[in-house]
Length: 446
Ligand SMILES: Cc1cc2nc3c(=O)[nH]c(=O)nc-3n(C[C@H](O)[C@H](O)[C@H](O)COP(=O)(O)OP(=O)(O)OC[C@H]3O[C@@H](n4cnc5c(N)ncnc54)[C@H](O)[C@@H]3O)c2cc1C
Image 1 (cartoon, rainbow, N blue to C red):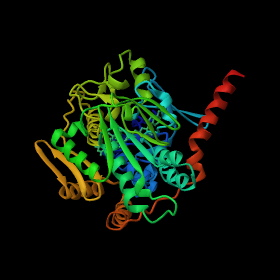
Image 2 (tube, helix red, strand yellow):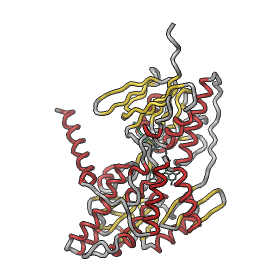
Image 3 (cartoon, rainbow, N blue to C red):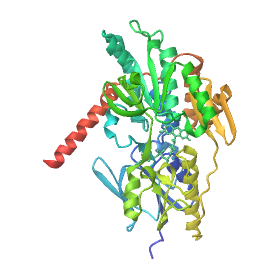
Image 4 (cartoon, rainbow, N blue to C red):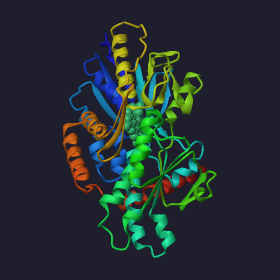
């Protein structure tokens, strides 16, 4: 008789949901295969610090293989998941045209979200989002590169366009990005140039909403606004972006001075939608995709009609209407792992996922952050200390915690930014990718 094989769990995605689910299964009687298109686990909340030269990419993106090196039942596979067969119970992934089909008994899909341009995907070329290490490094190249080009530019109007930075989106990512570009211009770069004065940089934050940090409430939104204005950030609320091109952007607003902003560097921090895997899963399961392409799940985070498939984190649309934050991803990932362990032990009763909020935090500048825990609101230096402690605690890996702390001391106590290197690869990456994509499309039709 062949030995009965162990229960096979496949986890798609090595973000917060996938990592916490996998770790939770470390003592379970099962084999876990984690598939991701990258080789790392990414701490997305600190991407803006990579983009603005405070942290290195390695500090927020440790290798998944290394994190799981002691977990004997976990196996890490590199690959873009291209198909999920719910009947045959297999996941197909591919990398460099090498296709792998991985069978599962239980599946956890934690493929996260992507930047949404609300149907204007052509904006992406000139206003990159901030979802991946590639995005952060490209933005670093664009931001530091803009000051270099301004130093070379003799024409005052062109120079002003190089020195204007527009951040679209007044949520946590947008305010953090705008605050850091302002600190870069007004503190870090002050003595670095001879022809330009980086303090002349214009940093603009625009959002269609009437207040910043909507989820934090009006008081904290106002505190964030006050701090950003103190740093010299120009804030325009109630203004919708109607066009983006290489030289600037157009705003749908009654103020004629703002209908066009000449700015070479734009950052898109305005919207997110579910990973395309969400649409695929919905199609395979015969259900309608939810808000922003997310997957509507049962209260226990399973795919309707498929109690062996869990969708967690940013990709799920839970009946409780949960926010797309790291804590939801971690807790729903762990919940799915516990359910799988119970099913392996023969207990098939579904248990509802209940999210316990640990609060919200956003850092605006050095020594100033806002935080909200239910009715308790903090801001200023106290908020910043809490932000520091929380982020150091949740960064993965002891070495990363030590080096990140070291870089924060350099950047916040001093003026320096240790990670200002930009390479040709970063500057030309998007162009190279676009050329590759053109070649691929052309090859399909030849
Ligand atoms: C800039 C930024 C700042 C943020 N700040 C905060 C904050 O301050 N506080 C907070 O709580 N939350 C914050 N968030 C949100 C938080 O990071 C997310 O809620 C969390 O990462 C979601 O975890 P997840 O596991 O669902 O998805 P992710 O962490 O996005 O992981 C998804 C994984 O799936 C992989 N993947 C996707 N598609 C495929 C595929 N087809 N094949 C293979 N692999 C695939 C991706 O490579 C990725 O590794 C921020 C997000 C961003 C982008």
